[in-house]
Image 1 (cartoon, rainbow, N blue to C red):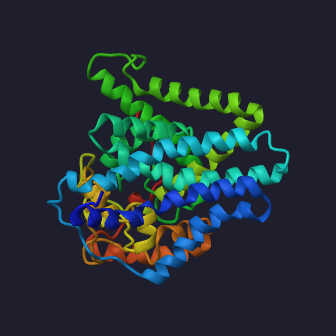
Image 2: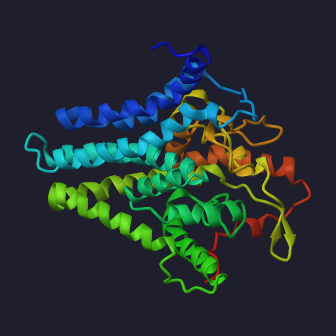
Image 3: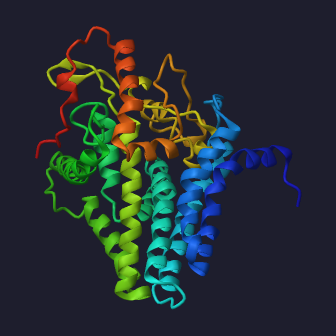
Length: 378
């Protein structure tokens, strides 16, 4: 059967965003052969897409905002198909690698370090796209992906806290200027869980329900995560649980590296009485690098995501430097820089100061904006 030309064009436009699926057979190769191949997943994810950015350059084109949901069918298929693919990849590899005799312990660790790079870079990112949709199946798939990395509360924290308080001291994942990633990371691990719980607790309280009510999604989070751990044990014993936990830890590290760079040093103006100006495109860092946006399904068009959170990734808009701050490189390079605090500050602090002078020349004392983030009151 020959597809209509218009359908073929839509498939072709969506195809580059499906490049992440090529990481799955690569993961199988690392588990099959071990040895030096265990470095392939991190190298391809972190470095190959950075080289591709240099080769294919920037993409400053914007899709038509009137694009219908039907016209985004193939884009939706990419994100919805990833959840079952990741499930089969992750637990299939646990069943294969945990008892494998052809792999040394260090090789098994190397394989699942790479798997964590994939479940963090792709899996959590796709869950982020899915959790913002109204479709119940897509939101369920988001929960499934987060359970596979033991970070289910991210959905509550992201939707109820981060989007509401981004670029203010009440948002735990807005990194303050001068705050290194190694201070940011342990703070966020603690504060995000509490802020997510408190946000759900507050929503239930408005319905006159206790925090322990079964409608609290934390029950679902716990059940899904327990299922994943039990399945890992059933397939690979305690070694399987250890490998599962390893990839989850790497994935969470990846997520929080991205969170760190997305709003570093950016703040909304305080209007008094605990109120802040509305979120604007200038309150997120952007990167128009084409290849890394293929990998990250336009996550780097982050200003538009916060400005219009319900937009699907194919129609997220990019901005010029006149409207939103721009990163010098795509996320793969910037997350590596974030792990080297001296280099990060040398690159980013001058950009934050330039941003302040550009958008808020009237603010002369930024000390209050530089305070470490505090969790929401209990």
